[in-house]
Image (tube, rainbow over the protein chains, first blue to last red):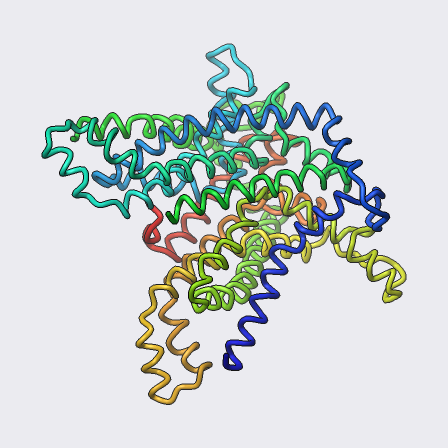
Length: 255
Length: 276
């Protein structure tokens, strides 16, 4: 390898260290006996503390319920949308999806809050799990559409045409030919939607009500009070859990 | 087909209209109302909230946000371009190296920000290590300043810069590089005169994708700036929670949205390829 190449590789190594070391250190210190940033020996103490923390567990449960419902809805809606747009583009719809993606989270959050408060003038409802779920569906559809669309673009159009020629109707062609072909993309999109939903703090914290505190909200509250190894433990679990999930999703997407 | 397509698009139309467009319209309406006696809103219609943005205190926060986002974007470009170049040149391992860039991006934003709190605070790892080594006596004030916010933003949004630049480098016609080399250009000259200009589309997309979320950042300045480093996002959040001045918060949000749109229009002019 020439000199430029060596310099570039050395740089890349440093960049990867920068990207990954902070989380690895965070995870490593979750196994520390001491609550201070001095290594005093291996311990699983903070993990058991995390699992005994009622707030953290309730937050985890809420986050899982919200993410599962929101993922199911946004994957279904987004997949249908991607297919419809693939058949024939709609600049207005894709434009608003794209806009929803680049809108700062804080703006999405306050606009949903303002919207909910306005609706509540007419309906006797309050902020809660349902408002969080609706918000999550709204912001994750764009992610689903992008991933499914990428998969549709690689699909052979003739497959569907063949199905139609052989007497399938539009729905049957979609259901029995296209959907199975794009399934890896749909699964990858669902995993992505799940992650985006499970991780969200900014929008969620604005539209959550009593009894709908999510895991990121609990973590945030602890982090605001200072560093706590319990957060390191729960972070390690989330990072590696989702890391695995995303690796699977990448595999499926490139298959 | 058209009928089926209409049914397929209907749910997403409904969600986007109801949960994205309508809320923005309500924010638009709120921004022209006045603050009510109990923090709610009331008529009459007024442009007062927009006039208040011109107050030097708020203008300062706007400029500060633009400055922090600008510096972060510049740093992401300087750090991200060589990384994208490295990945595009790494042959069979491309997918692995690309996944390594994407991986931290899809792990919780909150946790990645918390990781820097863990490293930078007074009793954090960096200060502890430096003190143990005897290099410093008192802890360095690493956390709760603009530098920490910029570091956090660069760390969080670097993948947004790498991915679009990588995508254009990947499609770059190799023969052009060879032609430059054949004509006697040194690697550096080839890079600045051929590679960089040809990847301009990716650079523009990357700049937009980093600048926009940095400008509207909320969590990073909140946690790493510790209230000292207030950005537009924190100002908006404050108006909707503690200050309870919704019309003003709505007006700031819309100005932020306008800046976002202008940035997009200037840098991309159209939906980046492969997005939708």
